[in-house]
Image 1 (cartoon, rainbow, N blue to C red):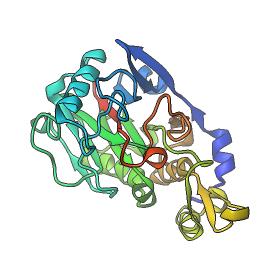
Image 2 (cartoon, rainbow, N blue to C red; image 1 turned 90 degrees about the vertical axis):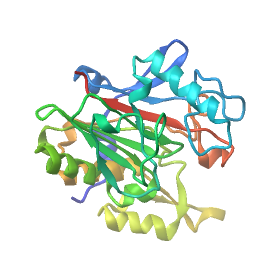
Image 3 (cartoon, one colour; image 1 turned 45 degrees about the vertical axis):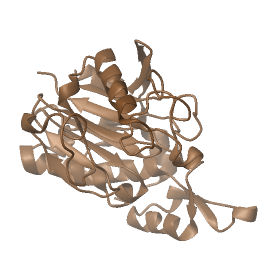
Length: 284
């Protein structure tokens, strides 16, 4: 499906609210909340990690003591009514591998052994809480109210270009018979189109992949060989290509690089930064 990034930005619903429970900040979607689906995209607020990982660092690959990371997951679970032993984390590699989970997988990646490399999960089992980690990368939250199935994926630029959001919807369709036209989709915070600077060749490859000439803007002056890509536009186009109506899609409109008070950012701080997490669970 071809499209205009500008037109999509003007048409899509922006849907995000900062919740603060017990000092822990989480971004939520009103649309998913109305569907009674447990979910959120964490901020950096409310944990025990010292600088530069202050304070709710949930990244499992950062140079920080594991006991701090586990303490932060316990704090998050306590603040938002999650069962710590059912938190189940991807082992992302910026790819498009998606796993089907049941309650038997609960806890893997945090309190139990990790998975092999994967960037997304689908399930129809309320006995498992899906989780992904992020530090400029976006998240795809998908919910089908008819089959009561959910999907969550980590989407950096590589996964976005591989259409992991589209593949997540297709996996829900394959595994549970979900109809994309019924799905509710939310795109999580990420580095915005003003900040995501890339080589011109990569930007052009995004324009070709998504048939969207204005998915990037050109750099100028000393950065004439650079360009700035809209990952949000790529997310919206691939969800619509999967068959999800634009009216069923909303975006958490935050920039992880610009909003240093709320978010960690790999692009801003390099390896000396923490990670946020997205979580998604069906209510029983």
